[in-house]
Image 1: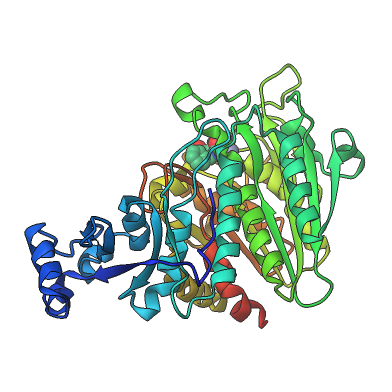
Image 2: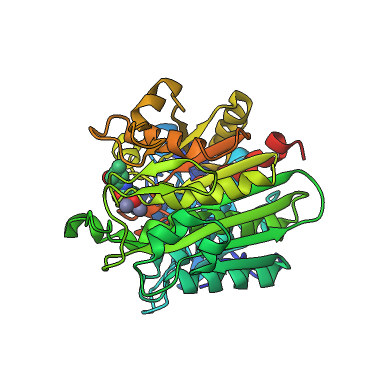
Length: 459
Ligand code: BES
Ligand code: ZN
Ligand code: ZN
C-alpha cells in the first residue's frame, strides 16, 4: 500500500475524464478508430465507468473515466478514486479534471490505495497517478497519511489496541514528528487528580491512562482532545451484543485527533499543538463503577452516574478540565460519543458544536472545499436543566434520551472552562464501501478542520 503519487517524470498513460455532456465534443477531437471503439463499447461518460482504449499492438493507448453529470457527482465524492479502482495496473496522467476539484479528486485517488492489511493482504487499487498539474502533492500525501493512520487505529481490534497500545501509537507519532509526550497511568491518575478517567477504566486488565502530547514552540495554542475508549462494553449497563459488536471503534475520536495532529505537525503549521487522550477500556469486573455512583471530577463538579455506558463524557470531562487549565486559544474534542448523533445525521456527516459563529462559518466553507462534510448542532443552553439530576451537579445520562447528542455536548462544555470550544460527535466508521472509503474506520472532520485552521486561528 503506497499513498504516494508517481514521480512526475514516470512514463504514464493518459487517463481522460469525460463527463456525459462532454462526450460528443471529446470524440470529435479523437482519431476515428478511437471514436469508433468508444462508441462500440457503449461508453457514455456515466460516473465511475471505465473504458480502456487499446493501441495497435494490443497494449493500452489510454484510459477513459466517466465523470458523470453535476447531478450524479453530487450524490457522492472522490469520483476519481472510483475510477482508479476499476483501472488496470499502470501509471496514469489525468486530463480533463476541473481545476476546482483537482485537490479533492487527487486526494481521493491516493486514499483509494488505502487498505487495512495488518491481518490479511487486501488488494487495493493498483493504478498509480502522476500528481495532477497545480495540486500540492506533498500536502495531499501528508493528509492521506494522517487519514490512513486514523483508519488503521480504528480498524485495529481491542485485543491489539488497548490503552497500552494506544499509548504506544501516540509515542510513535510523537517520535516521528519531534513532539513530546507524557502519560499518567493507573493509580497515578488518582494522585494527579484525574478521578473520572480512573473510575471508568479501573475494571480493565489494562490500566487506564491520559496521554499528553505537545508540539510547536510558538503561535496560537490549539488543544485537541480525543475519546480513547479502546473498547466499550457499556460497563455494568452492559450493551446488548448487537450494539457492542463495533465498539473497538470507540477510540475513533482519539484516532481522528491523532490523524489531524499528524497533518498539522508534518505540514509544520505555526501553532502550539497539544493533544490529550484519555485511554481506557470500559470493562466489567467486581471493581467496575456502578449506576448511581456519584463521582467528583477534576474541576470539582459532582456527577451522578445514571448509565455506565455514558462513559465517554466522563473520561473527556477530566481531560477537558486539564486542557482548559492551560487556557488554549481553541480547544476541540472529538468523540464517538452518542448513538443519538448517528441517528440524527447518519455515518457520513460529522455533527459538531460551537458557540462561535465565525468558527462555524470558516469550518463549513472549508468542509465544502475539501469534501469532508460537517453539520452544526446547537449547544442549546435551555437544555442544561436536563443534565442536572438534583442529587449532584451533573447527570451523565439523562432519562428519556431527548436530544442525546446535545445533552452530551452540554455536559462536555461544563468542563471546557469557558474557552473557545468546539466538539465533534463523530461516528468514525464507514458501514458500506464507497470510493476512497472502504468499509471500516474513517476520519471525519479532520480535513475540514485542517483547512479551516488558518482562518480560525489567524495563521
Ligand atoms: N460509544 C457509545 C456511543 C456510540 C454508540 C457511538 C454507537 C457510535 C455508535 C457511548 O459510549 C454510549 O454508549 N452512549 C450512550 C449514552 C447513553 C447511555 C446516555 C448512547 O448513546 O446510547
Ligand atoms: Zn458507552
Ligand atoms: Zn463509548
